[in-house]
Amino acid sequence: MRSVNIGLLGCGTVGANVLTLLERRRPLLESVGVRVNVAGVLVRDASRPRDVPPGTPLTADPAFLNECAVVIEAMGGIDGPLALLRPFLASGRSVITANKALLAERWDELRGYALAGELYYEASVMAGTPIIGPMSTVLRASEFRRLQAVLNGTCNYILTQMEGGRSYQEALAEAQALGYAEDPPTLDVGGFDTAHKLAVLARFCADGDFPYSAIRVRGIEQVTLDDVQDALRNGERIKLVAELRRTPGGWDASVEPRRLPGTHALCTSGASRNAMVFEGEECGELFFAGGGAGGMVTASAMMGDLLDYLIGFPGHVPLH
Image (tube, rainbow, N blue to C red; front, side, top):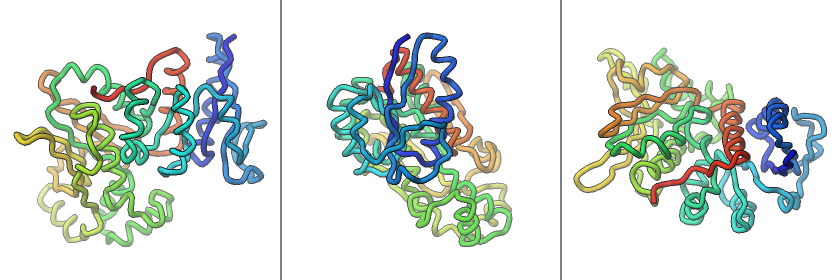
């Protein structure tokens, strides 16, 4: 029986679901000779009750990282997790994360570790819907042309509610009440969350050093009820669309609200689903759609990354 110590940074909705899923998969892992030990779970307040498996070692002291072969980062934010991960990665150990903001904005520091196969981050874009795996492997055989994607469930929800007659402010308030949108909701409705995800994707199909700063970003704050209703009357729908395309002058990347035909693939995937259309010279047009958020959905992708690590598959390697 091979024993592997892992650590978890953060125990919010995603972190708690990672622990739950790990318990479900423990018999499977042990049946193939792997025993996974949770050395520690970093939280701000270890005394606060949490819905986690009995005996979970909650702690505010990150010293347990010294005992870990791999760490799962579920904290969110940028500088806080990076301060903890920097020495961990420098020691040659692997990290699993869903943190698209960290990947997008600190890529200059992280790219070397990604090239070495030490970063696993399937959950950073479209959560449990596998897109980074295909883009980092089989789709590289096809010359990339363009992608269009809807990558933020909050914006999708708000725009769908506006199609039903609610104003932007009413739809936003409802999204916040349901826990879909943060307070303040700038990262979502301002388009920045989508831009973070687009930067991550661009490094698999356009340029391994694609800079987050190269993406033009415009959110949905200025979309009015009249705009949405006018689009519907003309057989169209407004979506916050991330697009990356080849132009004669290089790569063009943008995030902005767009009017799309109602029959467009991004409009028919469902109100709360993420979706992407990928176009390659040889593979043609491919369509991906599924849940793009949620604790267990995200945890499922992180658990998949952990399984890859345990059987020796490298992390997600960007373009060289």
